[in-house]
Image (tube, rainbow, N blue to C red; front, side, top):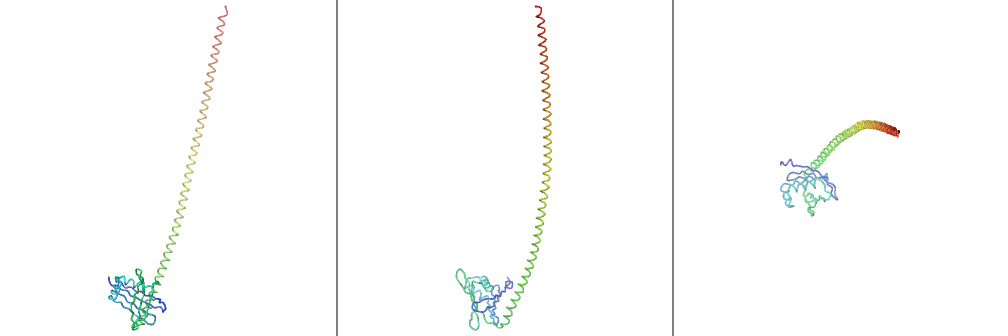
Length: 249
């Protein structure tokens, strides 16, 4: 991979206990890094070579990539659990240090920063980077705000459409249910009319059947009475003939 593709830039306003804040600008490559430090009036630089980084990483039994990643993490963002230092060294140099824990052991990394030959250039470079970063951040905030407003507008439209669809669905269900009830009630009324008609027909049939039975009983009774009357006449006639035969004696 091309080294320029792996280049990263960071700038940290570092708060140090008992001293004024300093600005630490870092440029991170694939296997090395550069650091510029300024307090606003003076500046220092540290250009760590590939050999120096590889040697430091070997001392801590770390791959170079892991060593650079950890250094970028602590010099790109101030870690609250770390103790930072920027102390004097020989010949106007400064020693930049920070602490961290690894596997329960507290470690300290130090890098020597040499005085810059052009403090103004270093300070202006840091300020330009901060200004550009602030502009990019502001643009990002504006773009994200616009995106958020657009998403909010779309969400409101979707919500309104959803409410409309829900209302239409409820109205459709109510209309369908009302139509179903109307059809059901009509069928019930029709069945009730048919049942009433059927019950009325059965009543008429029962009444006619009762009349026929009574007529049959009357006819049978008349036939019996006529038979009894004939039998009575026959008996009377027989008695009369009997008396006539007995008279001469």
